[in-house]
Amino acid sequence: MSDGSATVTVGQRWPGELTERVRLTIEAHEPADEREARSKARMLLALVALPAPFDRRADPVHVTGSAVVVGRRGTVLHLHKRLGRWLQPGGHLEPGEPPWDAAHREGEEETGLALDHPSPGPRLVHLDVHPATAGHAHLDLRYLLLAPDVDPKPPRGESPMARWYSWDEALAVADDALRGALAVARAEPEAAEGAGAAPIPGHHELEEGGR
Figure 1 (cartoon, rainbow, N blue to C red):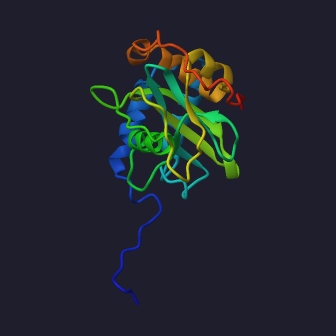
Figure 2 (figure 1 turned 180 degrees about the horizontal axis):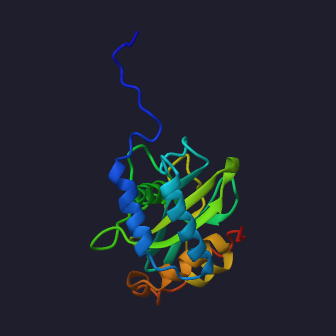
Figure 3 (figure 1 turned 45 degrees about the horizontal axis):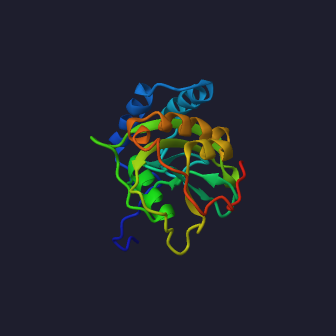
């Protein structure tokens, strides 16, 4: 006998039109290299094949959102607690959340910075499909996020190791899954405005290692 409470089906909490909106955005995106072109093709197929592409509970293959954080000093990366790698902020979508909002939320949560989408709104700069933990595969949408010229201060529970990298430093520690996103973001007008920033003192002692 029903107690009157609603049962939420896996994937039900995302609006149906979101899949089509994301698909059209991906379709219009111009890949920067061969890896990104392969990722774009796989994402478009997955968005058709998966009944709930934004829900990590529905299938090991699902959409995630990442923030390529840019500012006067370059870009912000954080040392992933489980993977031990310097990565861009990002992660899974909350119920009902579009990927650009997930990128913004995760970016702020993992850096402690107040971030903004560029005008006039969210800007998709890169796509990548890559394996993740627990046998998952992430269809990762990378959005440009703008940060103020202050040091990251991740809150308790997040990795304490988050820092500004110059673009050259970031590219040196990035793996293939991240390097393409950094190269594209570096060419964005908002990143170019900070290209002449001086190196940050006191950070050279931090460990640097790629995936």
